[in-house]
Image (cartoon, rainbow, N blue to C red; front, side, top):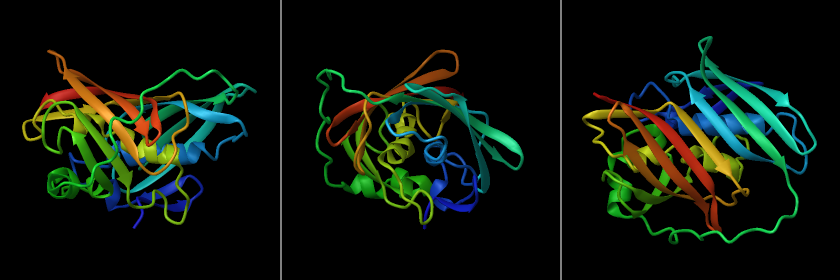
Length: 256
């Protein structure tokens, strides 16, 4: 089973694999973000322009049901292009995104770190924890922790791979695979107990200096909680060749 089934142009039906950890009736933002990327890839494509930044603002819970994704070109140019996307459910806008594409050209690349470690074999905790078994999105990811752990608080380094299709009978790109995983930073590096607190992200910002490749994505994530109900997660993103960019999430924090 896939995460989504296309109903018509820009319309999708979400499946159980999109379920998030807070409510079985609402989606994890990873699949929603990847669906935005999937639709933006079909919006005014131009050879030689690659997505370099995606900023998603979340206006409310996204239900597990029908979604409509509308896209537009905000600024068109030969060297840069700005796109926008809006996701609605039941006639209500639930999130909005902007994306920048930048032209590809030869530049002197600076040295960057390689992956923190090769993806390890799955451990019993990776396979049996609530993260891997307790909700649809978690079950759709193959989790491989290098440091930290599925239910440990504190920073974590983890490899992940989507094990189901994003959209039924449609190809998934490495960028879509990265988008599915990038929204997991606050979950894998949680600083507070899931049982006592909510720490829900109101946004996701992905910045890339090169295109990702392959099925596997790695993140080094750390979360800090402030004294007034807000938090921040910072994640460094890798593919199997090395670092590709970063992701940040602003968190709403509250007792359950």
